[in-house]
Length: 150
Image (tube, rainbow, N blue to C red; front, side, top):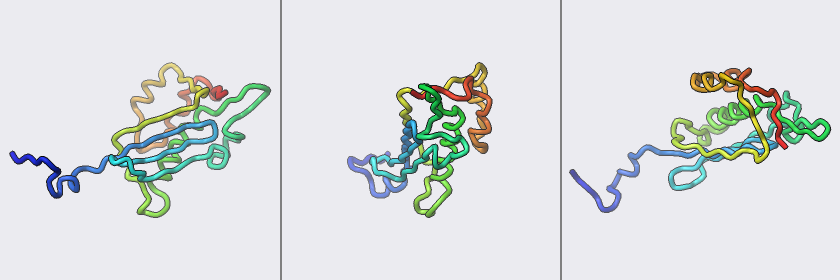
């Protein structure tokens, strides 16, 4: 077979383009950045819980009562759905993200946020349908409707 000490002409061009998705879930929202194999930014997007998911009626991403702050557990799933939908289907077609090119995902979460799964939720997670939203599929899978966040 043929070997090259340097990349052969056209080899790089024919390689599958691979992207990496970084997610950061903070108290106030969910942010995403997609980079390519050369660490160049491909796309970024964000969801602000208060602005983009107003039906949860959070303030700064939380429900605060007395000294207790919580957030709706299902809100995080809906935020992820909305974020990925916005990145893959809205706006200028040149800025849309082809999610099939993503080969790796990194996630950072809230330092103090907690989501508690019900017994049996693992089976639901294993049988998720990629054609359906997470909010509808995971509704009822959380042990606490509102999880503590700080």
